[in-house]
Image (tube, rainbow, N blue to C red; front, top):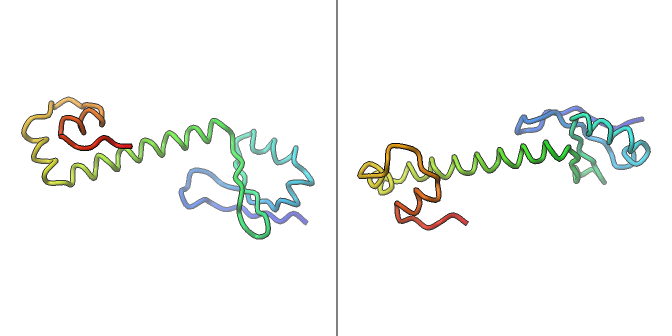
Length: 112
């Protein structure tokens, strides 16, 4: 009997199928085909969900989203700092500037 569960991942980016490693080993071509069709999969080993299979394009999209969210969070944190807000009000251009340029103009350390 296949031991798999449909579950919505906490981040809600995709439905993730959970498959035991023993089941995956029995039918790797089937499961790889599903992943290739855009259905990510978690491989469970010894009761732990240890491996995730997804298309490279989906991984790249998620990585890009993480970078964008990280930048947005950094901007939000900067705008909450009264010192930074004061400097912004005194003279940064009204047009947008790249984050690293804004950090330089505000005399803040560059992000690593």
